Length: 117
Image (cartoon, rainbow, N blue to C red):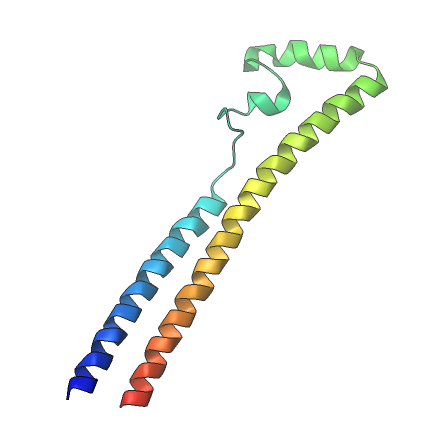
């Protein structure tokens, strides 16, 4: 009888942990699909503007830039976008890891139930 209650306790603990891991995986998955902003929190940083009012003036300045300066500006923007993508993929990787861990734990719990019954 003590073995049955011991296995039931481990099953309950394992399934609770699996639910917690699935909840954390859901939270990180929702975190992945939200828009990513630069560290400062505004899209103006990507465009290199202090505010949206400067957009027209910035467009004129970009038109007057040489080809090399435009390439340098594009390289800076690409670096910033790559950093944002790296952050997003890191969170996606954590989400997938949590899902795999939760499914493994739930599988172990179901296996314990099958073996002990």
